[in-house]
Length: 395
Image (cartoon, rainbow, N blue to C red):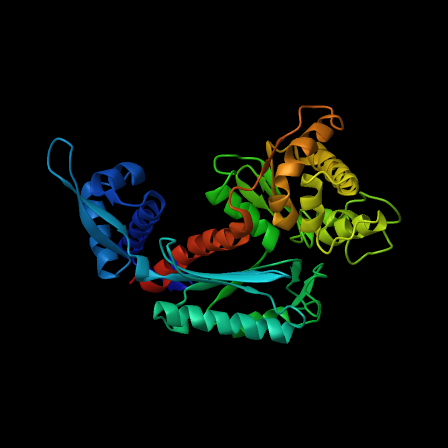
């Protein structure tokens, strides 16, 4: 058998495969005993013991006490060693940036949220670098301690040019090579994911999407996007552009008038809500002002709310016809803050637009942390493999 062109001893290869299986189950199950690992992996108890000893020597797992209370001998418990790896999660938004540093079992050891300096790529990159350095200092870590960084940004990463496409809220990021400069933020491997895709992953891992095989996360705020989960897995599409519903032909006018934003986004995003409010004579500075006025019974704000509900329902009618999700989770600035005004009435409107029973519509349970938690979930899964590969190799 050959790995990377080098013939591996079969015994050592099997040993590594066993260690990987045990490591993966401990990662999945948390604190676990040898008998439980034997049952979960199908490996013999002696094989489990050898694998655990190797993983302990590699400082990937550790013994954490005994499980008592059952008949017979107390069982020694093992868990992933938290300090075996570190993940930096970064949510890059138009208005805010959020960064969190977590150990390998997902405990956040440092976090910062700041208003975004998104006017230029240079300013934003400098800000991210400053915050990352501060988090490392808070945790007493060096840049080389980071196993993986996961960035969540609007738009689609064009890997051929290094540009960020379909991200009008991040000016300058459409230029070739800009995305590649994310490597400057911290000296560690990094991955870049669409922010709404990560929000869907976060909702599936920590929120309302847990246990739901088919759902969509619809983010409505300064921009509009959708993360799609099919059969329990994130669906990206052939070019990573699945869920770019901002371009759905929903709303008034010619969809080509504002090609940078998309027709649906132009009318239903925060800017669209404020623009309609002002056309109706309502003096509102933000979308939040409009929805607060609607809660207070303002008739003009109620008209804006009615239009928003209609736009969202029509967009979801198309989504429902194509994807047939069980659940629609509303998030983003508008989706979360005005969800109490939107969810029930959008569901009623949607029922009149689709032939079959529509999906449940609920407001995200993890709110503004959805992207950050999704980045952590993606990072932790990848970091597990990273630390194993760099620590345990067939000899």
